[in-house]
Amino acid sequence: MTTTTGPQVPVHRQLSAHAATRLLGDWQSKGPAYRALADALRAAILSGALGTHTRLPSERDLALSLGVSRTTTTAAYRELRERGFAQARTGVGTVTVLPRHSGPAPTPSLTGGDAPRPQSSAPHGDLIDLGQAAPAAPPDLHDAYQRALEALPRYLSGIGYEPLGIHPLRVAIAERYTARGTPTSAENILVTSGAQHAITTLAQALLGAGERAIVQSPTYAHALAALRGAGARLVGVPVGTPGQPGPPPFDVDLFESTVRRSAPRLAYMIADNHNPTGYTWTEEERRRVRAVARRHRMPVIGDETITDLYLDRPSPAPLTGDGQDDTHVIAVGSASKSFWGGLRVGWVRAHPELVRRLALRRESIDIATSVLEQLAVVDLLERSGEILAARRVQVARQRDHLVAGLRRIEPSWRVPEPPGGLSLWLDLGVPLGSALAAASAERGLLINAGPALTPDGSHASQVRLTFAPSTDRIDAGLPRLADAWARVSGRAAGSAP
Image (cartoon, rainbow, N blue to C red; front, side, top):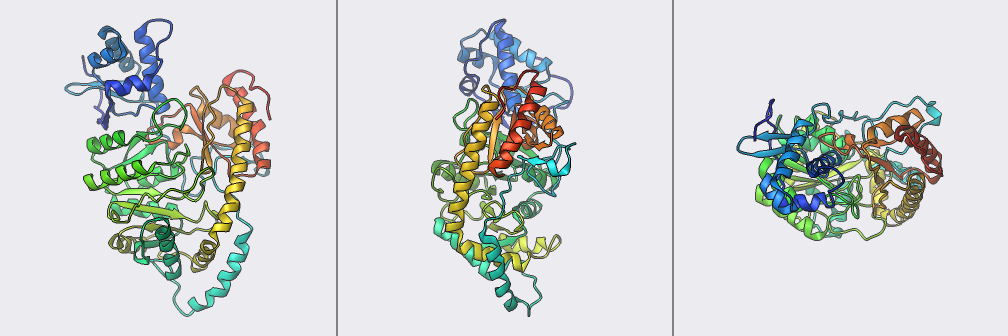
């Protein structure tokens, strides 16, 4: 085996022959076996099911596992290298990469939205956004602001700067964690100006330039931007869609293998209603991730922004567990998805020492969060049971409406029905995600291309759509999606809804 030219890529994880056989499934097709195997491996890399910087099993081990000759696996690996999807390293083996023209997706703007936004040529008033997962405000919001105004005078004699957050809100958030099973006090809570501010502040406090950060692939695009902005080198752990072919929704063994090989400074994870697949970790997965964090002395940031939006099942215990791992497991939450995006109030739950450190660091960014907004959130949290029950019913109705509409457009699409969250991870079956997003934008419809939600530009066959908008807006957007699909796929899109 000869090495390829050019800089050698790092190895972040290793794939066993057994795992490769399970991942490839029924890979054989007409034509030479080596080409079918190379095509199957290439498709797995493009879809994100097989992460880049993964050491493949040896040619001999894979041949034995698949029941083919070593000549077949040798030729398949050679074809992968020639097509730019693998690199051979002396003393290491064959490592997966993406071709040089398929780099990471561009960093999104942090001014709004959930991923880089394609430019639309449609009139502004005609724009339909099925890419930004932001529901409208509940009817209770106006009254919450009224009561917040009534409570505001008691704060007017002070200077209005509360770097840690106002005490009533910190207590209310702490009580929420305690009620969910994680004993928490106000000293564990830092109030921020939204979850994005929380993630950015954590990244800047915990990361140094060039240090690695582990993320799920795909994941929340603005978290990728925050980590990159802090100078991190991102390492993705492939995650799949529940009930669909490909990698498991979350593989703890692969996660720990990636931690062990890449020596990251931190990990950013979404354990509840994962954005965009909708998967929720089991209690066993949560326990094992906490153990990995302890064993490797690595902070895990658990994004709980969408934790309240369980649609088909009750909410599990927090990733933070019994709270004894608060030096290693840090939670980020927000009022934006539960109540309204215009409420720029988020929070961090962490060890008190880190909370104080973050409060000092934030002073260079925004000093403190608006007192009026915090008071409104205190009021909303007191009434959250009734508000969120109505919100879940509405969001579930919109999800079902979007799922049904997508299945009418193109029967070959794999359309999941996520049990929670605000987003749906649509598999087109062909690497046209970016083309579909661009063609949709030309028709006044915004959706998110899969590569924009990954650290390495993979998942070319996926797009993310949100069911946060009303059913009327979904109905207005689906014919545009059908028309865009007909354009990029080169065939009739089927009956539009």
